[in-house]
Image (cartoon, rainbow, N blue to C red):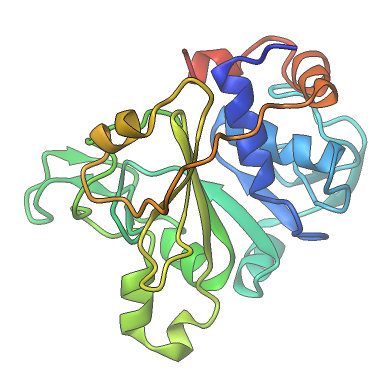
Length: 250
């Protein structure tokens, strides 16, 4: 079965939670939410998923659908306990991200007089210093992948190292998934590495859309295609309205 670029992205997001076991999967963005729910329905049945609010769902639900049967209640205080104790793996978004995974969701431009005001740092500092973090970025461009983030909301590997062992001991940047490829930080200095390119994407296309030098180790593999059962779950169970294709068009 052929798959769309959005469906490749969903399965690439799902792979971020492979091996996590019984922890809370938190996601922001259509494809990342679908990825968390797909992971639970396939290779990570122990994951905890929510309705996007305070209910832990007994089964992953379609995007935008009512929660259905719930297996627990997760008020904000308990959610924060999971964050502080490393029992959550969140896939966040970013308006800017640099070579070491420092991210910005706060403001664009000089801090004293920004060109654009965004969300603020929100929970990004605590997330990145307390529990595993990945990122989903649906539009890969030099506006997002920048040499230096204007404001650091989420802490990258270089800043975590500068803070010392006590602050960085739980720092764990896993991967970045975009509409062009998958990236990780498995390098000696924690710099971003191109792990795979999506089907139909060339390495040069990724390099041109990135505002800093990526680490590229030899021949870059292709992101895996979704298998038939994953496509069925995406199309018939999790996203029958095709919202994924509004987020990623190719």
